[in-house]
Length: 281
Ligand SMILES: [Zn+2]
Image 1 (cartoon, protein in one colour):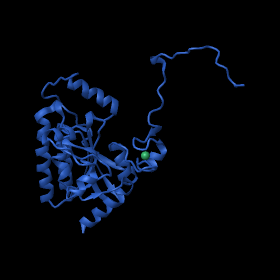
Image 2: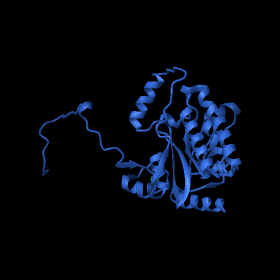
Image 3: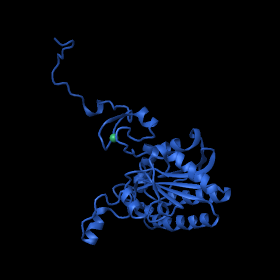
Image 4: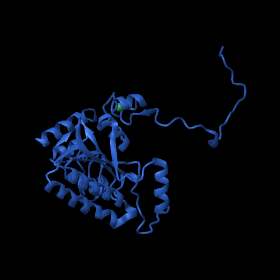
């Protein structure tokens, strides 16, 4: 006999009355589908401890993984985008920005900060995919440019963590100008002999790949990351050929000479510290 008996049949909870499960306590690994508890994710630097899948994380998590004791000073934290084109798609761009800012707690698709990795100074600019697909608008470009200015002024190495769907359509040409601006700034960084490390994470595509993401003194990717310029469907239709297996994965891109290393996120901090030390000498 059961301990409890359901006496009323056909209980229905209306959508408004349904309670939200606390978000992110349990997560399913997108690759092996095994459940991952939040504390395990934190402990494993947001890598699935069953299959090694690298979960998509944002600047908050990358900063906590990389900066010593999660201590850093954010650079230009309050910069927000304007709406120079008075753009409207399914909704007004200004409304989309306000909503996304409220939902994500971010001001735009990037955060930059200065701190230490293993006791060595570093400036890290990290993109957030949650914010309109990590799209590169004027704020992203400007924050990268100012981070590079800071890196030059203080002779501190610069690490860029890319995670982006490409240009921000709502800013059209203003978005595309960021490619030229960031590339020019990186040339100045190079002239000043300050090291630049680029870390490409899943996904790094479009104008980001075509500019700052591929310009590192060292270009690193996380395992399995999607890296490309145009999507596979567009390429297939253009060249009228089937694409090889594993096309646009970090492993494929490295095999073809566009990346220097693929590094597991759990070893990332130690490896970066080693690079910084090597480049200092
Ligand atoms: Zn897994």
